[in-house]
Image 1 (cartoon, rainbow, N blue to C red):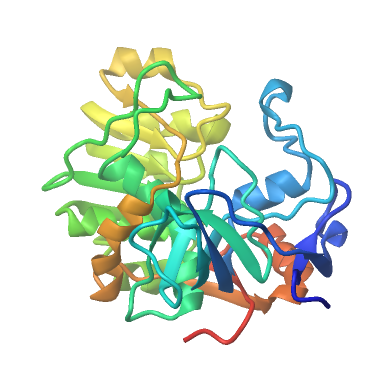
Image 2: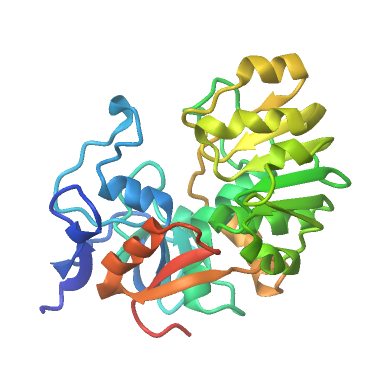
Length: 339
């Protein structure tokens, strides 16, 4: 392997986990405003398997035009090894973390080196390792941009109106899919903001979610959550999609339902009749917000749960784990030993 190549996970066609190949790839060249990061760890997210499979989950007109081979992934933690001359605020040797170029470009994060726009970059929290830092960006930014501050003015691709977070202090918040990547962060953010939190997950996750701050727990394998929850101010449906409208009847008039996955979500007419806000948005990369969040990861206010980790070469197995579902926290790939 020459000095200008690296190891990466690439795919030459769309398909299942078996299309992921561990092979040599060109090391990225820096453009203005970018830094080159030696990757220590990579966080996996649903857009990774959506893209691997050809973005079949999206309407055809939304599917990006791609040229094979492609490299999946957006979330990384690592160390800066080079910076473009116009970059300020980052230097060689800095430990950093990022959600790279999402949703506007191919981040190509399943690799030993990644070029990152400096605007997407933040200093890595010092008190967590690279595995935990890499697991945070997309899921944590999603929870943050739904619940705290959207942080951008880009037109919402899913609904006409801009998404707006709602007050949380003293409110009753129900989080469906609470043990997953976005869900376990939403539990912690809502609790930090002063909400009374009800977590919905399978019973095996109850102790985990109560440890993260959940005040109440609903085991969806034993009861139907929307049949027992009432007078809720906000539902964060981390599952979302076509079934999200079932939570409308749990909400007070003046409440809100936030499906994290907004495609296919229905119930707008019913929400209006009930006096409920139904709102979703698209997470976007923000180094500034990751920097704002960093102290909360450093002091343990927000903790990152790792479901499982795999070496970069075993990305196929990591995607198979994701396909099995019931993930607690995040799946990560290790590239070099984290520090």
